[in-house]
Length: 260
Image 1 (tube, rainbow, N blue to C red):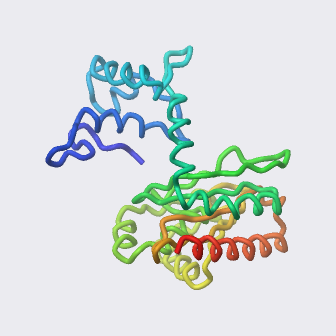
Image 2: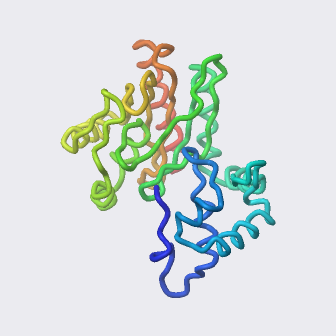
């Protein structure tokens, strides 16, 4: 998701701290898809003078929020790892979900991920890696421009009517693979099926040769979190997929009951 431009800064309403907002926006540029930025790229992105960009980067680097590599480019710093750890252990959803994520990982030996939707953005709160020799380096999960992973479809399917309508306005049909559902009508039909069955699958819809399943987690009657299991398709035959879906549904019921 592209950050807000300089002409329309994040939080530009009354009382907003534009300096703090811009520093936060710079940190939010760094993502799994693009973890490294140069100072020139950041200047161009925000249409800021290089001297202004340098002041922001100097402050962030002094606080170990970003670090500079040998080539002069920047990536996120070690202090954010500590902050993420503190946030994770204080998050009740992470604590409850971890109770079921570890058994899922041990039973199926595939990646297990807890995702949270923040507006149209999806963030991985916790991830347990596969112990298999062939592993997925990442599980790309995005709601925009088009949901194709199990978690993205689940989080859209169980969004409130108001949020769903708003989210649909920002979607652009995108064919990631030959298996992607790439029409609005097809997506709406898929989302209805997900609401009826309580789970979503993604069979090479986002990435070739990758299969995954996802279930919603409800907290106070609302769904902002999804629990997923993802792996190489060759390692997950149809019988195993059925067992995974059943286990995820059990986990969804357990976590949602604990949260409520």
